[in-house]
Length: 183
View (cartoon, rainbow, N blue to C red):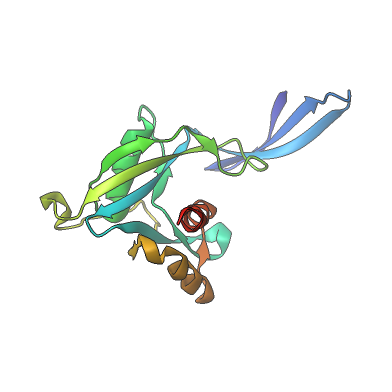
């Protein structure tokens, strides 16, 4: 596959991808990639013993409003996905957690981008001293609000937030649907 940059901004590049297909025809696709991309981590973080999931409500300009999401962030240079998860959870919510497992990186929107994201399952001891006072460290321009939702009420919460005008991230919606299926 041949790759050519069409244009680039501070954070994103538009790429042309040319591939000869099995039928012998050459086809061209357009894709977006992050400048300096190293992937991302998204945290399924559960407070124990209350069994509440940690969510964030974040203003996302491309979505044109607020989106309910699981905490997430880009992997910094020299950082593992697990290190990113620990750092981003603390920066976005103030919580300190323990990693239960990290799933392998997967594509979140392969028709648009080659970016991968690793889902990291985390437990947070809500009674631990380091979680008594929550201090966040947002990136410049981030508008975030931490929301704690009992896991058994997640579907109802998301439906209510959608009715009030918030959007919901697909990863969170898929998780909520899987919870319903497994019950």
